[in-house]
Amino acid sequence: MRMEWSSNLASMPEHEQPVYTCSTCKDQEWIIDPQNPWVATPCPCAKQKQLHRRIQNALIPEEFEEARLDNYQVTSPIQQELFQTAKRYVKNSSMIWQGRQNSMGMVAEVGETQIKRIPDLKQRANLIQKYNSYGLGKTHLQIAIAKELLQQGHAVLCISDVVFMHDLAQSKRYSDEGSAFYRLLSGVIEAEVLVWDDIGKSKYTEAKEELYYRIINERYRQRKPILFSSNEDELTLSERIGEAAFSRLYSMAKDYFVKVKGPDYRVEGTGT
Ligand SMILES: Nc1ncnc2c1ncn2[C@@H]1O[C@H](COP(=O)(O)OP(=O)(O)OP(=O)(O)O)[C@@H](O)[C@H]1O
Ligand SMILES: [Mg+2]
Ligand SMILES: [Zn+2]
Image (cartoon, rainbow, N blue to C red):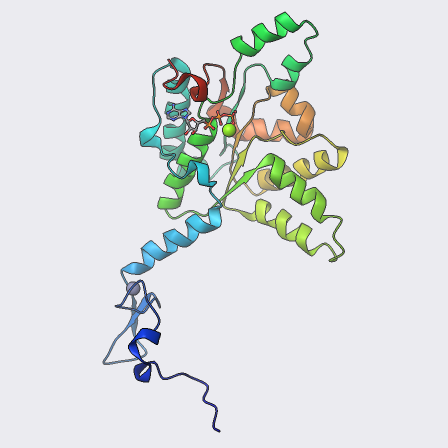
């Protein structure tokens, strides 16, 4: 029996032929000139396919598939501030990405850890209500910005602090000569745009503090933006990720740094 290297698609029965999303280029994303096989032009489907790949690589959480700038409701001053900052960030991104001040941050006015320290239960309950930082649409807006940037052709990586820091810390213990650890670490360091949800939420350890510093300092040095959000405030976030990391993170965001408090959209619906 003679083995052949390439299968002859033309002679395949129709039901066995592969299904292409684009019949023009058979998903090659190039159209070869029938007169000259050395000349190829990009197929119109290529841009769409590249966007699709970028979206898949961005790891956007399923629950935020619908989150966009145009469906973020603005009915309160804090929503207005968050929304305007997000829009301004998207508009100015290519300009500010040239410098070190290239990031955006949304943090609590009074952090979760700060409130937990109040011994008096009644006073604590009052503060929880007065300084709520949950459900204000921080993640919604981070993802909405990510989608705008993906549309513009940029590569984005979205991570959630608790899951990512856990995986990163765990991967250090694998007996694979550090390969998983370095893959995760270089992924977040090298990403063109990093969306970091709930930064500082992960349980504090000294080893994690070092990792926060490594990632943030490296991105700071390489002038790579971070879009972060947190339920901690400036003081408690700095305690959780370390002062050195926080000071860099803060200086990266500066003009795009919003301190939030307001009603929880999950509870109140429209936020009014
Ligand atoms: N202003 C808004 N307009 C439309 N949807 C909103 C708005 N605010 C929040 N949401 C929706 O409410 C849900 C909670 O919002 P989101 O998770 O973005 O809040 P968060 O500030 O990140 O909260 P947490 O601090 O708990 O993480 C999401 O489904 C989000 O899409
Ligand atoms: Mg969130
Ligand atoms: Zn095509």
